[in-house]
Image 1 (cartoon, each protein chain N blue to C red):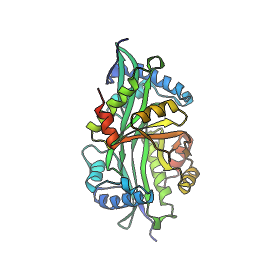
Image 2: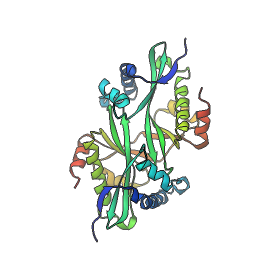
Image 3: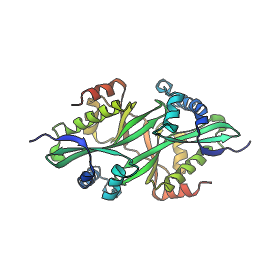
Image 4: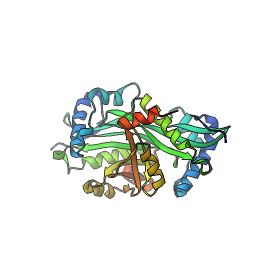
Length: 162
Length: 162
């Protein structure tokens, strides 16, 4: 099996990436929340005001994995960080170190860009992923929880602004 | 007591904001992690490539609270979101609805900018905050955990990139 190349995504990768994003939503049992479109992803990565960046794992022209990330900011550190929104490798391609290679690439990018932290999220039942991240030197924060307002609740909160 | 005005932060607010950031770190028992400087905050908010934006609560020229936020991105929604990094109101100024007013302002901004989500984090022992957020329509995600690589572990992971 040829090894894959990790490279920055290009506009030509958007269709393949969207298919992998949908696979990831299936794995996370969250397809009911998946409403991304090719136009939306294209715009986010390559539009006039990009919201995110991506790496792809390319094996002989086939995209078999991707990492999508953006910068966050920590007031405590007074510096931006690198936040990994998605890391996905197709099931049949796992076990060859691709996920780990992408994480190392991103860590190097974070250091190069003088980020104080490299962060992402994990579902607390995904022990395989947790073990994998911890082996790489990552810490799973035990006490922080994500708070979210979306959909109708967001509209309602917004409309109550003075 | 005069009521406070919520407005976008300006470069003249940076010193007062940094003092409040330090107070927040004290409240969260995280001062050992607090290394932000006035220059760093200025650069993040008003530099050539801003990483974040801020609102301040200004009562007659005194900054008594602030909210610092940036955009994140959800591949599931195919849209950016608004992420609130810090929300702080000085203890003596609480109970007058300032925190809630800032959250409503940010929700309105999120809707105006067509964000799919408005998110932030909370410490799981901070029940007062959790109750307050839930009353406003927010959901605390039970199963997501934040994973972090920082300091020496980040340098080490970066240096192992091929």
